[in-house]
Length: 252
Ligand code: ADP
Ligand code: MG
Ligand code: MG
Image (tube, rainbow, N blue to C red; front, side, top):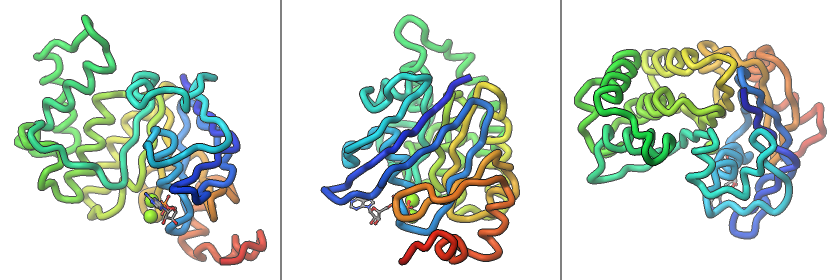
């Protein structure tokens, strides 16, 4: 099992400090939810962990099993076992979904250890069945013309095939109808086990009706200001964020 440690992480975008000292530790086998109002830095946290060039880490550490993730190139982060599902997955014209998946798997496995084509097709077919994804999606260009729900299902397809040690899922539930939400949750839950840890970023408690987190964290103004169990998410749904602001004396 792997451990991801985020220690006192400060991140700037274009000279403006967005993350102001985030601390979080995710152990293999654990599901953590990060919630919080819009604009508090949730996506910034995800992007910084994955090494998006626009996000400058000015202080703090991100460690995967003690190794400094921030020193790694983006592809090295994936090889080390990190996976990011982005809030807005990008379209790649001219690359089919199937080719993209296979080359991603092979990049992780390394030269000389490529997945046999038949094994790949079998694994992809099984995962697509499990996620109720139409088979013709395999031959479409990556994310091009995919509906919101198709994009999110497809991110979970990647997740199931790439089997990372730690996944960061940014608003994997946004724009999903209830059936798609159930399927996406089913895929994430299937990965639950000692060798998989997950950071689930969500604006809504709804997803957490289907995926029970071990811990819930609330982010506000660039920091984790409160942590608790699943009951914290329930309270946020009922009462919003104002009570936390009052409790902590945070002004808007
Ligand atoms: P959340 O995901 O919690 O809604 P974000 O991390 O997307 O919040 O954004 C946090 C803050 O950083 C916001 O004020 C947002 O406007 C700003 N921000 C995010 N991305 C960029 C960017 N690429 N360029 C400039 N400002 C950004
Ligand atoms: Mg947002
Ligand atoms: Mg966001």
